[in-house]
Length: 208
Image 1 (tube, rainbow, N blue to C red):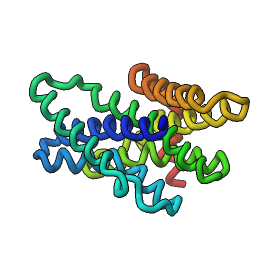
Image 2: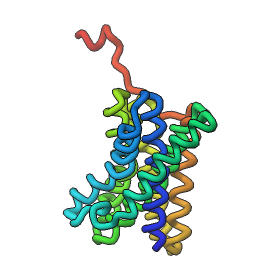
Image 3: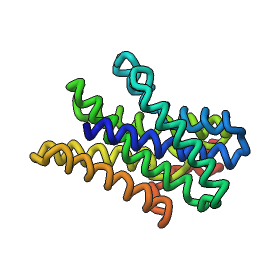
């Protein structure tokens, strides 16, 4: 039940993220719904394909699409009433990243995969939808922007979840702790510029 609730909340938050991105590009209502949908289901769809998990989660449960479309349209209505803060897209994306990464890792865990594989699939679940959104809006995906703690935050959050389970923590508090670590790192990157070291090759060395 917890995993299902996290999935629905994550879908709603990512749909908001996609809708805000659509608004910045001046898309119509169909464009808003499409972009909100691919942002919300992109990562989970790739995860299910990799796990050979059929039917894919949103095809077997219409609640996902209902939540996504409702969230997208409510976002449009809200922004028409009150402009969204400039950081709203990044905040919504960070929350979706935290929720989906841990939920995705738990789904992989239910298939009795090694922890490393679960962390990878949790990261894919959390980041792939945002990558598709950014590609469709002609943006450099957040996961590829230099120094960004994006995939790193997802890896840290899902790793925290598994580490706490290994030392005997109950699943629910371990889930919340993993989401908190993921969101905290992402917010630290957004607000305080916390980032990974950047690898660059000076031009004179690259030409040799």
